[in-house]
Image (cartoon, rainbow, N blue to C red; front, side, top):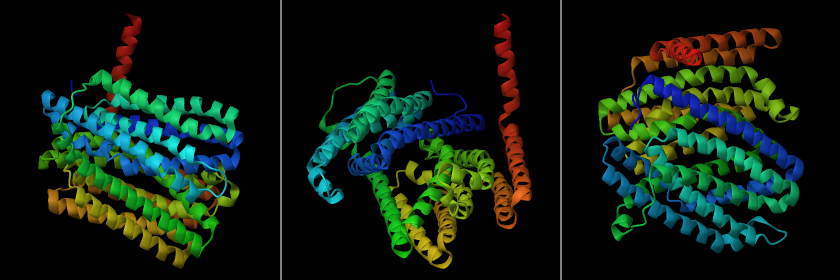
Amino acid sequence: MKEQGDGSYKHILKYTGLFGGIQGLIILIGLVRNKAMAVFIGAGGMGFNALMMSVQTFAAQCTNLGLSFGAVPKLSELYEQDNHEQLDYYIQVIRLWSMIAAVLGLLFCVVASGWVNSMTFTWGDHTLHYAMLGVSVAMLAISGGETAILKATRRMGSLASIQVVGAIGAVLLSVPLYYYKGHSGVVPAIVLIAALNMLLTLWYSYRKCPLKLKFTRRHLRDGYGMIKLGLAFVLAAAIGSGAEMAIRAFLNVEGSMDDVGFYNAAYMITITYAGMVFSAMETDYFPRLSSVCKNIEATNETVNKQTEVSLLFLSPMLVALVMLLPVLIPLLFRSDFLPVVTMAQVAVLAMYFKVLTMPVAYITLARSRSLSFLLLETIYFVTLVVAIMMGYRWWGIWGTGLAIVVAYVVECVTVNAYACWQYSYRPTWQVGRYALIQMSIGALAYAVSLCTDGFVYWIIEAALTLVSTAYSVHVLHQKTHLWQSLMRRFRIRKAEEQA
């Protein structure tokens, strides 16, 4: 049965909070794993792990055909229509193409292992390590197809369980290998973690949609549409990777390796922090949007509700981040990373524009307009590279933070204008009002960070955080009747205990 009230404010808030909290838990678990790596295999081992992970990611992006994303719109539409026969058929289509992608990933790593080894190492022979990564890439491809099935059929609880258990399992599997095997345990740990995630995903997916090994040429032919959108998503990711490489190379040449490290630290702490909220969009929001994307009125309602809740949920966190960055940066890194604070504080403002952009940007993906999505992403990444080059030359590392804001402003205007023109998207006045109020509070918090320090800084920033939080809670309470729901649950539980 489909969940009732699938597009309600309460539903959106529930899953934004759920997957945001899960992302926060995963980040904390990842910190434990990183600490264990630092203790048992040192900086060199961490560098080796990072290199292997980057090769795994690159190989997966080149060969997974984007199925984890491209398959969702079609399956979501069939699920919403209760077309069980066609849904079962296209699930088999996805599973066939996932197997093909798995074989491609394995062959890619095996064939390219020697060349990649010669390009990345001047000592030792790591060809076998790169070939072994083919096993993990193949398992990631199979997991990606099954994840698309779980997203499209709204198995949110299963997806949450996979993420949490997978993160905990990654620590339990990898830490003993680092302790006993040192550097030699890095690649086996990567493979075992991929195997764990694949088995977890298969367990939940096969329980919902049992495997049927009946494939024909028609199954191959009918997968082309999904792959077309998926390949556009993969190509956009490749363009993004190229842009990030260009930015880091520019900063290294024009500045120093320290500036590259500062940029990475600031970008990670701002984007990763906000990503706790954005993670719910791909998991829950995208399938819902895909199921109604051909209805203009339903699309506008779905997009605007998601934008409202995401903006109200994220804004207090952004104000708190501006306030706490002077403490978080030396705590998470080292005291010599303090120059990152000013860049990160201005970069936080970009997240307001990102939250106004992402729900709208998904309309293009839900409509399977692959070329349009690719064009919009390219405009953003080109703007980002050019803005960072200019910002760094004029204002140094702080200028790169300002450049990130400029790039997100351009993306916000471009994406919203395109959606208005092509899909008749119209933001509601509530979106504009909430954005104006919360962005004003965020801008004021940033201004306070520039003009004050000491006791005055903390008092004013804390007050602004409370104001932003109170406003969001007030609006969300009006829309979801949150307090009444909590009290009703409390009364029901109390009555059950008394009975």
